[in-house]
Amino acid sequence: MKRYLPFVIVVVVALLTVGSGAMLYRSRRPMAPVSVKSPVASTKKPESDRLHIRGERNAPITLEEFGDFQCPPCGTLSPLIDELERDYHPRLRIVYRHYPLPMHAHAAEAAYAAEAAGLQGRFWEMHDLLYREQAVWNKAADARTLLNAYAGMLALNIDRFKVDMQSAAVKTTVDSDHREGAERGVKSTPTIFINNLGLAPTELTKAGLRAAVDSAIKESSPKTK
Amino acid sequence: MTASRVRIIIYSFAAVISLVGLAEATYLTVQYLAGETIVCAGSSGCFEVLGSRYARIAGMPVAAFGALAYFFAFTFATFTAFGSNRARTFFSLTVWAMFAATLWLLFVQAFLLHAFCRYCLFSAAIIFFLTGITVASRPAD
Image 1: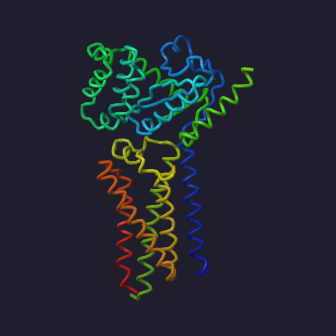
Image 2: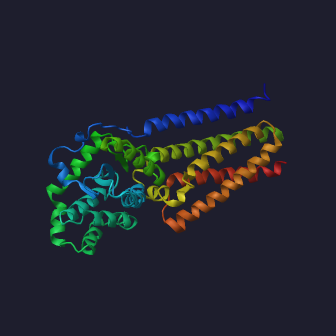
Image 3: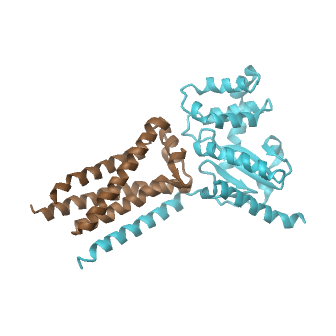
C-alpha cells in the first residue's frame, strides 16, 4: 500500500488543483457571454447620438468596449481594436463606453477628460493618448495636471476643457455608461460585446477578436442578402 | 533521529510549501484566464507586472508555468519523502530551474518595469525557501 501512497497523493492533489481552479474560474468569469438579442436594448432613445463611434457609423458589425483608461489590459487591447477597425472597414464600427473601476484612483478622472475632449470633437484622440501614456499618468500623484497637459497637446481650449471635466453633464455620461455596463453584466475591464454578444475574457486576443468578428460577419451576411 | 526520518520531515515540509506555491500560481492563472483585474485592488504594481508583456510566454501566463513547476516540485518532494533518490535529483533540478526563473522575474520587476507585484514576491519567497531546503538537505547524502 505504501508503495502506491505517493501516487495517490499526487493524483489527489492534481485533481483538487484542477477542480478548484475550474470552480474559481466559473465564479470569476463575467456573466458574459451575455446575449441581448434585440439591438434596441442597448441603443435606447437618443443616447445613440452621444455614443463614441469609430469607423463606419452604419456598419453591420458593432464592437462595443467597456473600458477603463487606467486598466493595463485595456491599454494592451486598444491597438488591437484599432487594427481590427482598419482591417474590417467599412463592415465594423467601434463603440467605446466608460467603465471606470473604483479601485483605479484616476480612472474616473481620465474618463471625464476623454468626455471633455469629446465635447470639443477630440474624444478618440484623447482616448488614444490616454492609453498610449497610461504608464505615465497612472503613477502620477497629480494626474489632473497631466490630463490638462494632454488637452494642450491636442490643441483643445484648455479653459473649456477644465470646466467641462467638472461638469455634471460629463459625469452623467460616464455614470450612464457605467450603469449600462453593470446592467449588462460587466464586472471587469475590458469587456467586449460584438453585436451585443459578450466575449469571454480568453477571446480578448488578436486571433480571438478576429474570429469573433468573422463569425459575426458570417451571421449577418445571410440577413443582408 | 535517523537520516531517513530527517529526510521524510524535510521533504514533507517541501511538499507542503510547494502546495502553497501551487495554490497561489493556480489562483493567478485562473485570474488571468477569467480576465479579472479586481483582485489586484490597491496595488498598481501588481497591475503593471501582471499586465506587462513579461507576464506572458507564447500567450500563456507565466503563472501557469509556475503552477506546473510547483506541481512537479510537489510531486518530486512527495516521492523523495517516500524514499526515492531519483525523485530527489529531479526535485533539485526543478527547484534550481525555478530559482533561475525567479531571479529573472525579480530583475524584470526591479529594473525593467520598476514595479513589484506582491504575488510574485510571495512566490519568490517560497522558491527561495525551497532552494534553501535543497541546499540544506544535500549534506545528508
